[in-house]
Image (cartoon, rainbow, N blue to C red; front, side):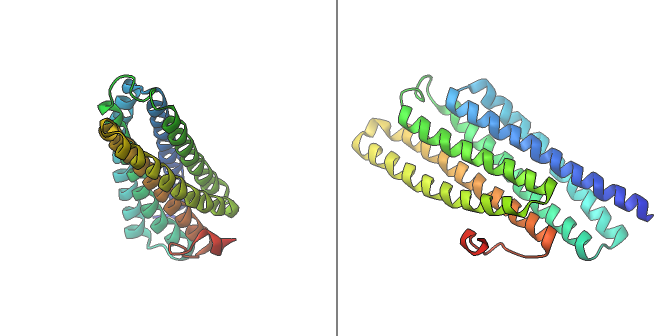
Length: 226
């Protein structure tokens, strides 16, 4: 493989990652609207579009395998390809969890969400924070801004705390009102998937940092990066 073609393939790989991330960002946005508006049609659309991300993951994996087999990359190029394989796994899982959330939206009774204004606000805030994390991560990937990675890690800690707070509130109401148990369990699963999405975004941010610097920070906390 000629060097010029190799560099072209690396550039295309980079572009495909950005595209995959942007589609996933759209899925998160649709999921937020499905949650806050109890929009079942948008939920169905998001579930269907999960297949797009699945297909992209397989295609990018093939591209990475081909580059490794034919070019035997080293140093920074090898880090980039390894990080790409790791990142697309997390991106695909984010799309899966958007789909999972939307499955719960479809189970909700008509109007049930509007009856729980306080939870709606809490969960919407948590979801918007998750969306912002992905936006920052994609920007970091494109620009190489490592400070954004630190912001993402801090946001993940905040989302973990929000999850615990909302979970306790929902649990308390379920204990006080048995008729709320079914709806409460749906809310708990939604915030659990949001918390997992934030974790996957954090993984992506850490792999970006590894790709750019060679620093492996999977087991580090945000405090250690300040």
